[in-house]
Length: 274
Length: 295
Image (cartoon, rainbow over all chains, first blue to last red; front, top):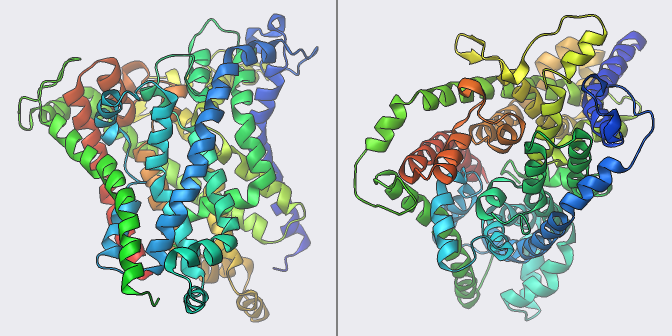
């Protein structure tokens, strides 16, 4: 759109002020992570770190190391399973018409909007019964199941855009539905696979409710819970708290910075319509 | 799409195990929670004695729950208003092709990739009445004694302590509405705007007469998504403030978690969760039904 010069200047100023508001918390967190404990005094939070030190980081890293590993052990299988299951479910709902398919799909999708508090008590009882409560495996199962709606939705929206002729052509070539899925559909699904992969990676990494409810042992808790424990105690120095928050944020931040395009695609497909 | 009967049957058979597990974990568990909410289960040991609506009646009479509902209403209103208005302004700034658009977009969106726990830790320090913004204001000579999330002051039922949480949540979610609006704006035909400009329409007229009507459905979707997020809010409040003095920063999600898993009042916790579910369903079901019907 063409704009006058002064008009454009005002917009630049607005955009820069907004950018400043988004970034200043980042300044606070990085700046204070770098301060040695001796510098962490009451009024000094806003003052630039004079003698940057790795004290906060090494303390936070020591406290969170195992939990970072736990989070990776949790997030990787969940993301991969979400891609596998989501693509199968999404494909069937997008391309096969059967009785009640719309109602069933509605019921699937509703599962991603429920407040998880409403299933938490039965979930704890069930995982307890099958011996998965308090274990990372239990969290993996939980996240994989409750991730099915969003993963299926993302794939369904993508497959709905593939022309039917492409799938039918595969069938005329003598393939069955499974063969078409494997040899025709899967090879062109890569972009959506990446979207689902990083979407699930980010949301499972960032989850707190399931993690705090289903794991009690500090040695197997994911990093979000450990960070909350680290920060929840008042005695701990806040250089270590800030460093801990930064460490916990780095994996998802890296995903965002390097795969931002796919991240935004995932974000936009959360609003149901394809 | 054409599909043989054999293939169709195979597809349905493949779907069954997935749907069975998912529906058990969603609808089976919801049903189970509903049953718990009608029970007398009030300690570690389950007690499924039927007590009817007693837990709900007690909940409606509880001061904490009333405060939670009021907090949720105010939080939702401000959170949605800020994200919609702010998100639109940001998307418009990027839409008019400023240089460095990629940089601005990255900056506005990055908080979305963070966990609410990270956001909570961060903003708890920024709003800390001793060392946070107050300390900064004091170095500039202001008196700055506002208690932020520790304040118990309220105006017409609005606990001002919520301001800190509203700012933290909006900081994280403004990028979401920005991205939604930007996608909508990019879909507008350039010629539509150009011909309006040739006809002498000013920028304001273009915004109000062309752009806003086109992005109205996006605004609606965004409101639904943000609304259901704020009805479920838990992590941010847990990490940033906790329930606060006199529940000034409490929410149903937090109340449910503490009641159930810290206090072992399972039946009451289940009742809270079912109220939450109903609130979310009122918002989501009509939206979901209409958007799936359109396909």
